[in-house]
Length: 419
Image (cartoon, rainbow, N blue to C red; front, side):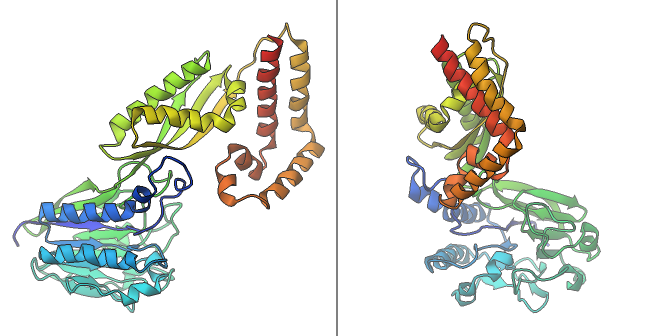
């Protein structure tokens, strides 16, 4: 068998929205909306540049039911580019694909081979002689271990298993669909297991290779870092290497800023600007980047930052715009803590703010807050509640933190007035 390469990808979630961005001004809506399409285009570009023998897609090609049939047509157009280059594609549909009735009506090019849903199926790739074994999901939850019914390895061929699974015990937050162990997969005698479902790149085993490529495009702040596919090299009928290749069109990142030793707001801004610039330089790799900024540290600025909570994100977004128009701030999280401030010359400040602090232990006040916030949650859009640290704390009934922050903010305001 001559040396060759193949691409293993999964969890493309074509046309899935990048959550948490669409409602913010300054973010190019079309670029964000089409990020998963751009990532698929990047994948095809890699396949052509590397002249791979074939492409394997291990489930969740789509993101459930489509609002627009152009989603499927875009995928077909990408597959035709591969067909024109003589590159076949092998697909095992996953749980999200099973939700889509439109998937069954796609006019797929004849270079695309889809594993059936009734049981495991084997394809022999004509160009390499590789045996690929897989099964698509018929329903969202296949109801147990699918790999148990997969056939044994075909002698004299390189064998690849294609399976959408979180493995045994799952990998939170991913649902534990089609649970099985690495040992069970290894017992089939295959050379490579092309898995899908988990959105983080992971080489579970190298003997045999059991690999999650991760998803192709991060879609929210929980999917940070580079996203892409696995480029697998084969020589002398054996897998010799598995290399990660980035395909994402937009990157997500968490940026922590330690403001503990900042004496004034302009010090905090300088520290945040430096952290944003470093993250964009070191992590974006030439891509647009979306960041969540978290301010940390025990600081005398805690009260002042609380006072500015309503405009803090806009302040930090202005800093990001000064670095690049492709650096976007998704949210600013205030995770600072108060330090005791000397207020001997303003005893009234201590007395008034102290009333809030006493409320932390007041069960009646906690009950009133729970009721008031409960009524509020029924009247505001869910996305607004998700975007507010105060409302998130209230939903979790973290009233101690709310009252302590209120006391710190009041101290800062009354302290300024006393000064």
